[in-house]
Length: 263
Ligand SMILES: [Zn+2]
Image (cartoon, rainbow, N blue to C red; front, side, top):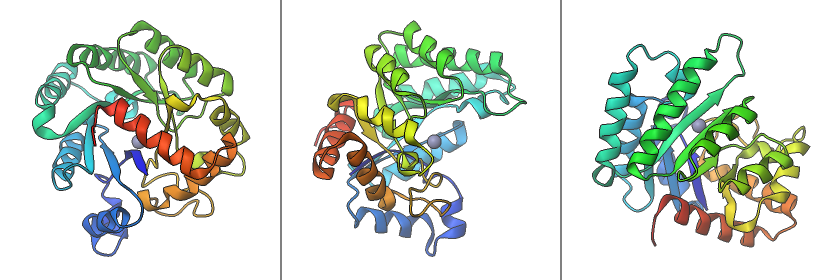
């Protein structure tokens, strides 16, 4: 299984797992996980993601970017964007294969939507400049996220931990995007996510954990990790009416293509 969105740079692993993050990664690689994209949410976590990826050549890659909740707190846009530009310029040496996670998060009242949109657009411009795929975080901002994707027709995007409707999934696919499903597809109260999973074409489907968050049913609320992704795989396959082996095969093939990784 290819986990296209994980945060092993989150310090919860060192605090909550015996042996820390290294022991956790040994465990998940021994339990059916072939590849992991380790995702940053600001400059420091992106650098850490790349440092961790270096230790697992051919099995872990990094994504560098500024998450909307963090991006809106940045005081010096130019400095942060220059740092990101530099990371992307050195991406082959650093094992960085995507820009992310970036996007829009309108969930909380105190969000600065204008600042979020500026940072999203500036980072999309960097993706276009470097020719790298983009991992999009979209929470309660579906229309504005689609609009941004539409503005950059030459940038390939994935909507990560998809939470939109089947209609939105179809619209994003029509714009050339991939759709990635996390443990939420297994949640009892998420029929909308399963309805969306059912309409994504075979060649646009990806799978992820978003760990340490969003552990799938029946582990909801626990510390999530890539080894639990088989529960997501089973729920995703069931929602699509596919055999789990088929869903596993296509999500891995698609991830290889999306991130430009060859076997
Ligand atoms: Zn994430």
